[in-house]
Amino acid sequence: MITGSNSAASTQRVEPAGDAREQLPTLVDRTTIALESLRTQWRTVANLGTHERMAISQLRVYGPMPMSELASRISLSRAAVTSLIDRLEDEDWVRRQADEHDRRRTVLRLLPRAAEMFDDVSSGYRGELIDLAREMSDSEFRAVVTFLQRFTELAERHAQQLRSTAIERSLS
Image 1 (cartoon, rainbow, N blue to C red):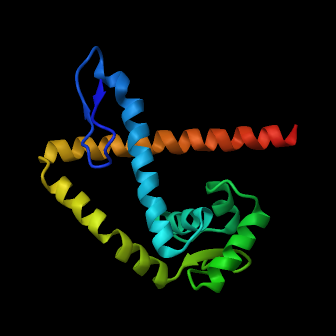
Image 2 (cartoon, rainbow, N blue to C red):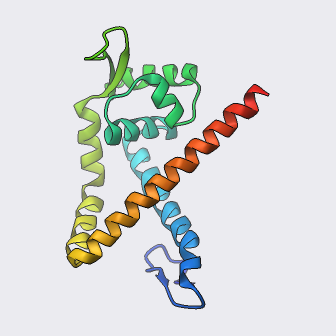
């Protein structure tokens, strides 16, 4: 059973009641909600829209990519991403550049301003997250990292399946 008050400062705990593992999806949902709330505040501080923040996050985590890949990752049409990137370029967040390996192709690159803004806004959170990791034993840390890697792969796979299903529906 997941316990805790409705207070944002409360600590959520999973207590063994039956098979506590069945509570994992609910705990993941609560974690996702908390992270979305945190990212909304970062977006507000940086004066960015939801899709702008999503684009910047994708480029920050996964590096330079073509607009078509970004469009797929954030579930927008290529036309919508073109408009989005125009706005981000005007504000000096990103730049379109020729691909180093294929000059016919254009990739999107994050400009230093975006990384600096992200670091400024998230430094407290990131510092506390690192402190939390340092409190763990090596085996606990390895277990958390393994779980997060597998969870990320699962979420990305399901997101891709949903994107494919949406595309199939739009074509029929």
